[in-house]
Image (cartoon, rainbow, N blue to C red; front, side, top):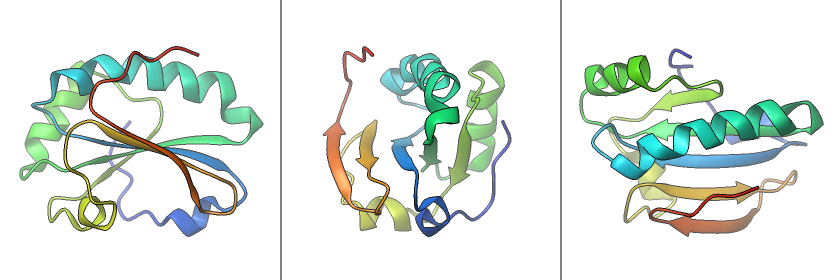
Length: 116
């Protein structure tokens, strides 16, 4: 899926959002994409939105990553790292579960043994 341009979490009010920060050089990020594709496919119709934010300095790096590792969910690009700063990201990948009301319910940094 190509980059979606500017996204704002406000536009997802009423949905549960799985927000994931990633970079092209991050091996665990590459391993998490198939899982996030399944998550979006399985629960998207029930109100879940997977949203990922790439923080590479060069968008070409992220684009190359996405060509070899497809995303069936929304992908935003933040080269300046403003969103990563807002969430105090310290490592890749970092993920957040955001409730329908916009509040962070859970956060995790680093590789995760992702299961259903």
